[in-house]
Image (tube, rainbow, N blue to C red; front, side, top):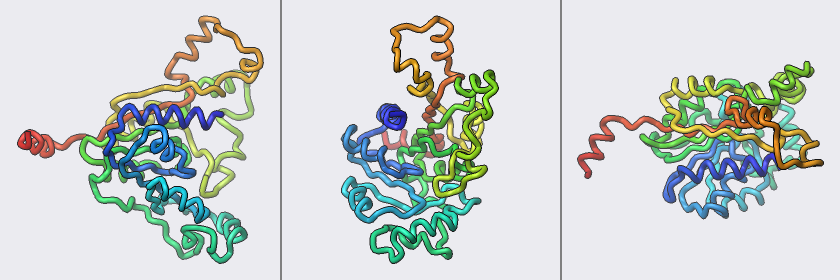
Amino acid sequence: MTQLHRLWVTTQAIEKHLQPTDCVLNLGAYPFAQEILLRDCLDFKGAITSTINFPFWKSALEEVASYQIDCVSMNLDPFMQAMSSDDRDQFYKIDPTGKHLSFFEMLSPDYVFPTRLPLEDSSVDFAIFAHVIEHLYHPLDICKQINRVLKPGGKLLISTDNAFRLESIIKALWVSPYFWEPVQQTSAMYFSFWRGHNRFFTSSDLSAMLSAVELHVIETHHEILYNSLSADFFKRPTKSFPAWRAELVRNPRLSKQDYYHCRKAILKSSVTNLRQDC
């Protein structure tokens, strides 16, 4: 339920700024649910390119292609290997000959994942970076890549968990054994193509990082997902909150998820050419 809600909230955030003929890039796309929602729910007809970092069933690739989604191999974290040897072994057990898996070449120890987006400079209108950045060790590099491929004035939607989310503060106050999540679920102890969570960001963190690559935040949206409330709330739902609890829930600094709409600066030369065209 959490994932479905998150997808829907992300789709609504995209719809607010997406244009019908935009060229879209989705980074860290698998399992392509966001792209399919754009096609089926928003009736989006523009081009969609999505990055992947592991093989998947050829039948699934055919389904993705039927939605006119182009897939490109990409390591979003170039200072880290994209797949572990354990990952490769698991895929080989599933399909040792490559008969059923697409992008089977990724399993070769000699395969080098691209670390540069295989797109021309200034070729993308809208980039989606939804709940991926918290899985990366060195996100600044891919942020630079996003800036490179965005057209002047192009937009980026980036979303991630808020480091100051209310549940983390409650855990600290209640002396929980962990602040965000058990270490066994994080990339400190578990590494694969999924990688687990590496770190979470505050609003100031993301603003500083995006500004460093000349992507400017133009709008923010804060979301409290249903699992920010206790399970007891849904067993015995109530129509009202005490005022102090309502204020906590509405406080953007304590939100569960943060969504940032960013824009690449329009170069002065582009503005001049636009005026001349008019």
